[in-house]
Image 1 (tube, rainbow, N blue to C red):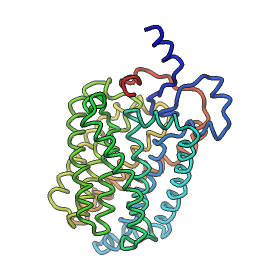
Image 2 (image 1 turned 45 degrees about the vertical axis):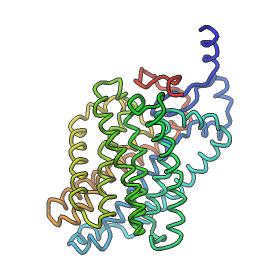
Image 3 (image 1 turned 45 degrees about the horizontal axis):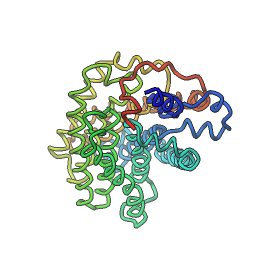
Image 4 (image 1 turned 30 degrees about the vertical axis):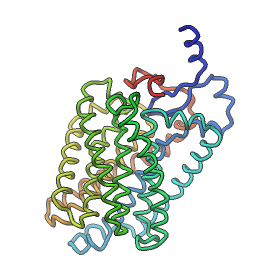
Length: 384
C-alpha cells in the first residue's frame, strides 16, 4: 500500500474542474512556471473551449434562418429586414477563424502534450467534450454562405466531420455498454449529452443533402442514447454529489438535446410533425424548469470560465427549434415564442462574447487555481 501511494504521488492527475484549466494535469509548481508562453497556452486549452465556436456557429445558423425568404414570406420580413445585411456573414466569418485557430492549437497539443490529451480522452467527463469540435464544424457547414448542400465539397466535408464522430460513438457507447468499469450508470454526467448532440447535428446536415437514410441512422443512434442518458441522470441527480457547482451550466444540455432533435427530425421528415412537436415541448418544459431555479447556478457564476458558453449554444438550439416551429404553426403564439427565445439567445451570446474578451487573460494566464471543493466526480483512479 505504501509503494502504491508513493507511485500515485508522482503520477499527474486530471483535475475535473470546469474552470480555468478543465482537464489540466497537475504538475509541480516550478515546472508550470517555467513553461514557455505557447506551451502554457497548450496546457490550458482543452476541448471545452470549442464551446465558444459551437455557440457562434449556431448563432450564425439562427440568423441565417431568421433572415431567410421562408420567414419573409410569412409576414416576418418587417421584423428582420432592419437587421444589418452583413450580420450573418460577420458571425460566420468570426466563427470560422476562431474554429481554425482552436483546431490548430489542439492539434499542436496532441503532438506536444499527448499525455494530457490521452488523459482527457480517458476521463469520463473530458471525453464528452471531444465531440464539440466536430459539432462546431458541422454547424459551420450548415450555415456556410458559400457551400451548397448540393455540392460535392459539402458531401466531402460532411464525411470528414462525421467520421470522427462515428469513431467516438463506437468507442464511448461501446464502453458504456460492455466495459464494467465504464458503465453509464457509474460515470454518467450532464456533459454526457454532448455525445448525443454530435449525432443529431450530423443527422440534420445529412438531411439537408437529401441523404434520408444516413440522417435517420444517425438520428436513431443519437435519440436512443439520449433516452438512456436522460433516464440515468433523471434518477441520479438527486443531490449535490451528482451536480457539482462547476458542472451546473451543463444542465442546460437537458433542453438543448431535445430541441436539436426536434430540428433534426423536422429536416428528415420535411415538416414539423408530431414527433418534432413532442421533443420541442419537452425542451420548453425543461427550460422552464431550470429557469425557475436560478439559485441552482449561483455558485458556478462566482468566477467566469468557458463552461458558461453552454448557456449560449443551448439557448440558441432552442431558438432554432422555435423558429422552425413558428414556420409550420403560422400563429402569433409561435412567432412570439420565436422572437422571445431568439432575443434571449442573442443577449446571452453578446454578454458572453464581451466577458470572454475581457477575461481572456484570466483564462489562459492566471496561474492562481480556484479553490477545489469536492465536485462529486468519481476519483481519477476509477476513471482511468
